Structures are given as C-alpha cells and as structure tokens.
Image (cartoon, rainbow, N blue to C red; front, top):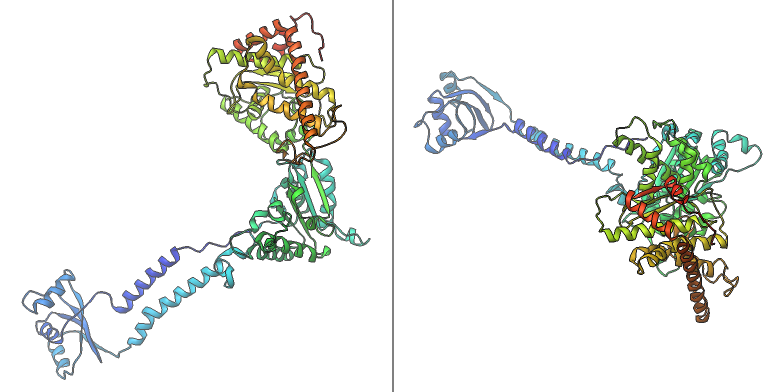
Length: 624
C-alpha cells in the first residue's frame, strides 16, 4: 500500500527555534558584559585582562576574577552576576594613541580586527529566518499543496487507499457461497489481464460494476478478490470520504481520484457505500447547490468521460440501491449490476469451510449440520460464528473446537449473552417455563413449521427471558397460506399456555403479539390471503430489499371502509390462531406440565430431551 507523506509536526518549529538560539549565541558572542572605557583602563592597569581584541569601534576580551574595590561598585556587581571565573567583556573604543603601548607594557595578548557587523547580523538573524521559511514551505507542501483551499488543508486530495498488485491478499479462493457473482466478474478479470481478447471483436467491457446485497454478504471482499485475481492496482475508499465541510471539496476529490486512476491504469477503483455519495438528487429549489449533489455531478461527468479502453474499471457496493440516482445506473456508467443474496445451505457450508481453515476442529464437527442451523446468516455472520466458537473453546482451555462450542456460539449470536446472574423469582420463572413450553408443543403438532432444536429459560440479551430455537430442514423462499397459519399458531402458543395454566397473562408475549400482528396484516394487505379483501394488494412494504423490514407497511391508499375490513380480517386471523393453539395445548396439557417441569429443573431441554418427553404422550393427533 502506498505510504502517506510524513505529517507536518510542531517539532519542526521547536527545532528551528533551538537552532536560532544557538546561532544567535555563537555569532553574538554569548554572555558579554559591557563596561565603560575608563573601567577597561583600570582593569588593564591592574593586570586583570587577557586576550584583548581591538577593532575600529570596539575593544573586547576576557577579564579575570576581579577583586572588590578595583572597579566601580556597579561594574563589580555586574561582573559578580556573571558568576565566578573569567568572563568576556566589551567596551566602545575611543581615540587612545597610548592603548597599544599600555597593552604591551601589561604583557596582555592582543590582536586587531576589521569590523564586520553586517555579516554577523546576517548570519544570526537572516539565516534562521530563511531556514524557518524553508521548513514552513515544505510543511505546506506535505499538507496538500500551495493553491487555494487545498494549500491550507489536504481537503482536495482523494483519501483512496491504494493496494498495488496483489497486496489485497484476496483471491476468488477466499470467496465462497456466491458462485454466480464470481462468474459475472470473471469477464472483468479477463479484460484486465488480456484486454485485446475483447477489443479485437469490437467488444467493450462494462465501464462500471455495481454490487448490491445485504450487509455482510461479501461485497467488499468480492471487489478485492477481483483486484487480487487481476493483479492490478486497487483504489479503495468509501462514499463518505468525498464529503467535507468545505464547498467544492467533494468534486475536487473526485477529480483527483480519477486523475490518480489514469496514472495507474489498468486498475480498479472501488467505492464502498455508494449510497452516501450517489443518493437521488432532490427537487428542492436549493438542491442543486448542495455539496453532495455537486460531488455526485462531478462523479457522473468523470464516469461519462472515461474512455472504455483506458483499462480503468469502477466498482461500487451498496445495500440501498433503491435510493441511488438513476443517472448513475444507466448504461455507460454502472452497466452491470450484481446482486448478492444471503447464501443457501450449500453456500453456507462452503463459507464455513473457508473460515475454519485456520481453526483446530474436533473430528466430529459436521459443517453441514452447522450450515443447517444458520439459515439467513450472511458471510460475515458465519465468520463471527466461527470466531465466537473458537473463543469459547479457548476460554475453556480445550485442544480443539467441538459442536458444543458452535451451539453455544450460535445461541449467543441469535439470543444474546447468557445472563445466568439475572435472578428471577419462582413465579416469573414458572411463567417463562410454561410460555416456552407452549411455543414448543404447538410447533411439535404443526406440520408446516421448523423443528424444535432447543428450549431454554435462561435469560439472554437485554430482554429475552427465554427462547425456543427452531432449525429449518431446508432453505425456503416461498411460504404457503397453510404454513403462515401454522406459524401464527406457534407465535401465540406461549400466550395461550399462560392463559390455560394461570388464568392470567403477562407482558412476556409482547414480541410474539407484534410479530403475529405484522404477519396477519401482511397476509391480508399484501399477499391476497383474505377472502373478504380479495386479491388486492392495498399496502406496499416500506423496506429496503437488503436491510429487512423497517416498518410493516408503506403508504395507505384505501378507504376507511376498507381499513375497517382489514382490521377485522387481521383480528379474525389472530383469533382463529389463538383458538387452534388453545385446542392443541388443552389436548396435551399433561405434556405441557411435564415439559414446563423439565425446564424448571434443567433450564435447557435439547431435541433429544424433547423426543424422550413426547414419547410418553400416547396420542399425538395433528390439530392443524
């Protein structure tokens, strides 16, 4: 990676000041006491002088230790302040024809000197000033140049990090689970390696490649892998790096970035989090003068002016493609769009295989089983899972990482940190036990829900007092109405168990009720699963495709009569799910009591424990 220039330091000024003081002391003569000429003659007669230097305008030299009474009290006091021993003195020379004879008579060593004060002045003041100006100039150059705003601060320079050739340290071997995306980018690599192969037929490589996907799916990693495979310089920066407090800085940085890219061609320029820079331009009266929009305009101009045969490819990544300006997405700018979805089970297994290369695993580790338990996990989530498992094993001083460590790491990621020190009173603990047992039993007697893998009443995270973990048997992309109804039953199973056992309810079902209500409303307003409302999709989801649900629904464009019908249908779905869950738990009440008791005893019941408990239940009719 290209080294940054050395930063300008305040120590430069300190060094200059010390140098100036040293020069001043050297050329100005150090600590010299100025005395009257008659005092000089007195010291000469008293044989207290040594090494006298006579010039046209001054007599100077060294005076020995002066006894009291030889000179005036003022001169004696001044000499005493200079300390003990010999000291330098100076006096103004007057017309004294006998001076040389008196010096010879006193046997004082003396010499003459022609005055050269202008040279001493230049050396003691002008030279340090020149040195100071030189250091200041060099400092300003290192801080970003001498012109305009960029001469004051490095605001006009691009902050892109340059990775030369294979310094990214990433290749396609390090990217797993997104094979289709890798195939899309093979052409980019081939063009950078052998551009003539495409040019001979008149083909043009896409000028820009936009990678979209959920956070953690490997967008940045994929871009680095392209640079690593192609073996070309790789400029990496974020969309927010262009934005500064000064107007015009963002546009200047865009120009500087593309200028650097031209010099390093063929190369790859990667802009992460493009939505920070490329958000759709506003229609307000003052929108065109915003700094961000000026920066975006400059980016559009630079990309439009980039010749496709220059060997510079622009890559960008975002998880919010719906807010990007349409001008960025048109052909000729970001021609190719590559979507990265969360990996399926096969992809998760490949990703786990990449991340466990440097981890000591126990022989019984089954990556397929771990992949099956991590539905919905992105690549970054799986990397975190492997790391957490390794840390847990190291904490227990194990020789390798086993399945127990992976299970505990998964619980920690999904449910939060275990809070065994959170003390619950017996009544609350019993309520949580029956609540979780209700979820588990309803799930066991439903055909279209994921299997229960673990039930726990150990508090986790901030507010979770217990949880029921379900493991999907396969990746699902579509859900039928019967499957959604079964999921509604499971969500309300905990609340129904509290009603059935205690004749009262608690606040523990708040999240369950919210999720059930959202699911029922989506069935009615978006999926057309209500006979009363019919096939009309009357609400649009207000969410980004890669960031999950931010809110349940978007704009409301229907009458109050329809809204009343929607509310009635949602309540009907929830009421029917409540009745079905109550019927199931009522039929298996003894099993419910047994499972809650087992949870109170052990706090955690795994799949094997649940199977053993259910084996004692003679009748297991499907009440769905």
